[in-house]
Length: 169
Image 1 (cartoon, one colour):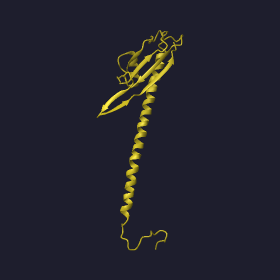
Image 2 (cartoon, rainbow, N blue to C red; image 1 turned 135 degrees about the vertical axis):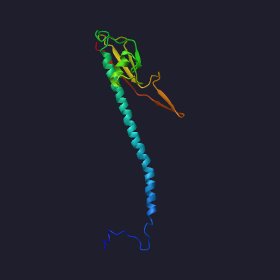
Image 3 (cartoon, rainbow, N blue to C red; image 1 turned 120 degrees about the vertical axis):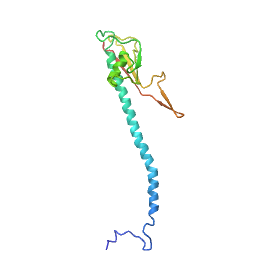
């Protein structure tokens, strides 16, 4: 015989299984309310993580190109000077800068990532304290947005990073 505290209080005239469907309905309702929230949270965490990773990669690309640009000032005899005119293009576009970035980040293959090098002080002399500004962007449009039409809705996404450094020589 079982101990009285372990025996559920079930009326003697109740049939087995009666009352069970009501609890299953409650569990189904709780699942239907909680599961979509859980899925949306998980998808949001992954999406945010990917976006943060992409932003970090663009910042690393901008820093790399800025470090290359600061040693290409007017006094760079062996490397040759870059600027002070604005340099723009995409990775792997056939230019010196484009090929440098494509070889560093995509095994030499072209990419739809764009760069812009500007000299905000109007010169590229390290002695004068001139600076170079590097922008890496996923969009080549002037307003900085990349628009894609998907079934009547418009997605606007742009990842961009800008770095400014003083020219070394």
